[in-house]
Length: 177
Image 1 (spheres, rainbow, N blue to C red):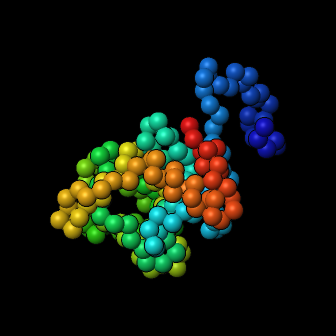
Image 2 (cartoon, rainbow, N blue to C red):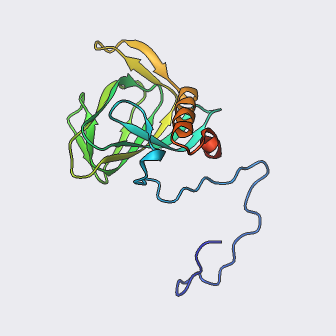
């Protein structure tokens, strides 16, 4: 039950009783998603970290908050599917584009577009909410594929980190839908 209404016009409205359709799973609710508790941020590279928020192993999709506390880099890659990003704080961009994202900016990445993600020095850490569908295809300096990173590697990376910091490897299981 959410917080009780006081003066809101809908205060006498009762919740529906049939909340879930057959076979539906409950929502994932995480308070303070862009937390300052660094244990929840999994090292993605030496300078960039990821906090998983939602993971779909069967659809090869995830949502996370990418974070860099100082200048950061995610190596060259492209996505075979679309990616959505919303900037929570800090400053970031792609070396291949003429824009720089700051707090409140939205980015839609088209499938097949190669880029090199960089985080800039800023008063606030770079925190960006990403919705990723499908793998990241790693690229060499010429833009040619030379590896990949998918949801299954992401899950293992998260499990290893959460086990190491004492949260427990099973923490990610509650994010699966």
